[in-house]
Length: 338
Image (cartoon, rainbow, N blue to C red):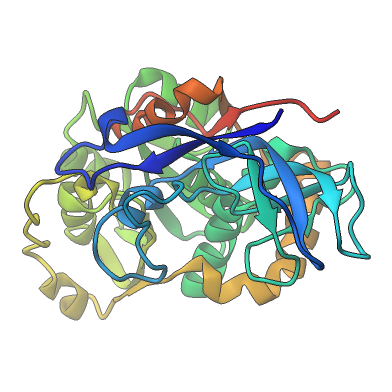
């Protein structure tokens, strides 16, 4: 190829993000300088946090600018290298964005790191990527799950929630997941080995939480926010921990949604509610890889990838996260390694 296909941010979305917020472009193939790599993207990661990256507000990362390539995690293959430790043909993981080719600089945060031996692009972006890291450190560092604890997970059929729940099971907890639709709920029980699942599309979530957690919730791993967070706060056990991982229910809202009206339950139950950002844990990746690798090898972790195909389908694949179409980790394959 002599051109670099790209999807750039055309406008900041109001409400639901859509393909109309992005523009397709073709640019010349970029050149590289000493210490840099030219990487051809093979597989892209899609994560709810990308919706926040296109808002014109400062966060833990700067917003994507109008006219800039949309930011996204990626795995690619090196096609040209001017770095002594990286060779053409090797696979690397980074933040390559919505484009065919990216210039990467090893050593910069989230720019380019080699895939561990035997790890596929799909695993690198899913179970061994940001979503797996988020589930691992969010659950274990912020809540200290113990045998007999009741753990509630929202967004439980997603890439992060499904792994968080399974780690809780490995620690001896009783785990209840909340997901949308009977297929997702059945997978949680049959394949991810959750003890129970609540179908928020067809069941009264507040009533089902009270029914399935009669002694209260010891740990709530929340990916959703909104009414589900409020329902969980009504059912806390004493000294519970509420882990705020995400709030996908409000990401596409045109106006700010009101917060939970029952925060005083945290006081009454002497509980703690805490948020976190996974970039604060990147220096501890090795301990995560060691544990997750062993669990995967022993068959103790099940994972799903929803893999779309085709460069033209990139914007619509992001939208799948917010319409409940995906199950497990949302990915898109651009090309296969050569």
